[in-house]
Amino acid sequence: MRIYEVLDTKEMLRCEFIENYHVLYEKIELRDYEIKDDCLLEKGCTIQKYITIFKGSSFSSLMKIKAYPIQVVDIIEIRKMVANDFPELFKNVQFSPKAV
Image (cartoon, rainbow, N blue to C red; front, top):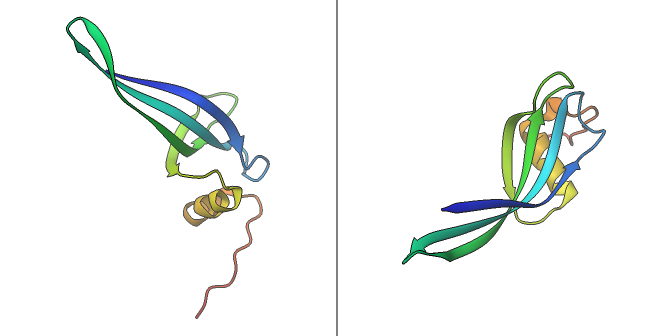
């Protein structure tokens, strides 16, 4: 049996995305259990961190677009990671010119 517990969540990159798109940070604790001799034994515990892009409006539920596992919450790296895959979601994104 697995139990997921959200330890922390917050919106990232506020006001940088076009309307109806959101980036959320989630820190989740995952615990694995097994039943043995009528007892519930914990097998292990891990902490997972994710950045997830959602689309939604005030008239609908949020729809998950993509999730990125991360190690450290670094706003600059998160911005680069999301802009690399979805530059069109940013209101104002400036990219450095690519080398020829």
